[in-house]
Length: 251
Image (cartoon, rainbow, N blue to C red; front, top):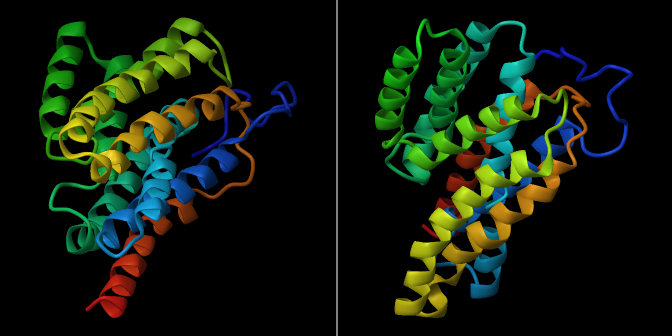
């Protein structure tokens, strides 16, 4: 993601967290979350709870950084092609070791398209049609409809803020809380029906997603160390490594 609009400028606050730090947090959470799925049935209950709780921080951070990347990139088309390429490559290990739906990079790609359409559609009717189409396609992707809602809300609320570099607490909290409530309600029902074995699914939104709010509120608008290629490459590689490790350890 190219720098711009003050993200690395002298006027940006040196305090807080850069996008580099947020990406590291997302990588750690993503690894924990995928490890919990890949090694399901082979982990102690407490370990499973911890991995899911940490994993919940991942998508809100990724969604927010997508909006930041869209705002600051010098070439949206190139940004989209990069996302599409890594989404396609990542689908192979994702389908082999995690799930049969489309991986989360496709969700981000759809979100990126809607962000662009919001700013460039010739009419709101065209934008509304794009939202409907994107939402329908997202239903076969990881995080699906809820992920698209979060991405669109991040941009809309930040636009209302009129701030550059960092958003207000409300602008980052509301999209995340929508996800927390949407995921926690059915998870609470599962805990009520099944007891403690269903607890990790509740900790994912209640602890993990909620923890992303103070992290995003601390974002200082700076890029920090560039790592876009590492971030994209890490996604398919860590899934493959986890999957192969699980096959070797638990054939």
